[in-house]
Length: 392
Ligand SMILES: [Zn+2]
Ligand SMILES: [Zn+2]
Image (cartoon, rainbow, N blue to C red; front, side, top):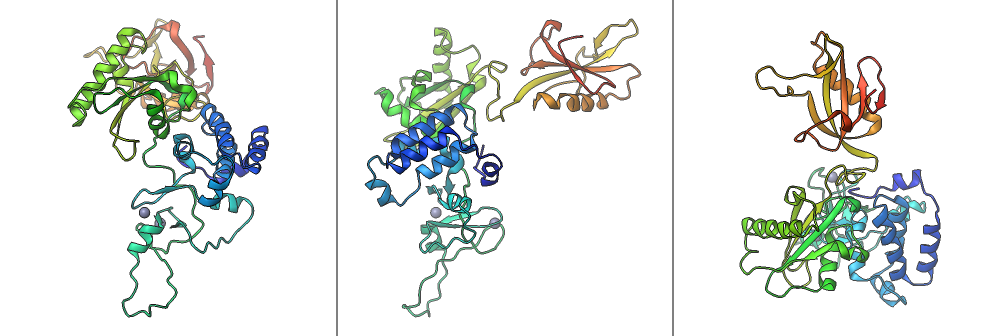
């Protein structure tokens, strides 16, 4: 989920136990514990709209009010990547805050009058400016009386309309949605010779990846090599060698480099110095969802076959290259219900064939691997429009 939409929550507020226990903690001022509960819940179900909504409630209140409560939320909690869908970010300077307007709107406020808003937003495209950027973009006239009440105004760069309230979630530009269950491991190196401790590394990782402190066993802290953090090529080299070490130890499955994504976290965003965070996703087919996928979405490899004259289903091959022609094999990410439609589309590409067609599906991206009939996940035969499990 890139950003939280109230409409989704309205469709399914579950008024769950989670909601009740979190609300009780918030009422008692125990915001830190409340957020710990919510973050654990979101770690299991990052798309939980109930979880996201109560998180927003737990973050509610002015900075002073929050600091005065018995257990204020911690900076680490506020920065958690699991809360990224709730965040509002300034389109100009990336300043981030949690706008409570979503909560107000959910309570039925149609008009939100905030005397001193943290920011303003375009009602069409959610282009947002924070208070600082609004005041610098303000083109107040020089001839204006100094006593004229100062109204901050801003205009959307895309739509040219005036920015207003409510200010809703935009998501964070520096957090890519990835399902925590697809993460096989995270390799972290800090610039410099001293290997950082786990409690230094955890906040950096949790800021950019949807993990919680319980996930510490997934983290591997590597030793930096002087001069390796300078540019992308040497950083890649460093990451590659660390991954290889972990593969040789058996900590990561082979081929981790291909499944990895490097994030270079500059000092400022991190605590003290630069970090290189390499996240490795599980081998495809090993988890129920793909990175960034919607639950129920899986990757499938499709393969077109035709019923040969001898009554045997055969894979179509190009007589020159011996390979399956373009469009006859490929990988798609889709929920299982979509497979009949996908099969139709594939068969349609080969409608010129005078033979009966079918499409067999394999789990995961197997386009580069060997496909055997034992591994077939299911099949859609021409004219049936239905998916049958296994090879019938
Ligand atoms: Zn700004
Ligand atoms: Zn706009």
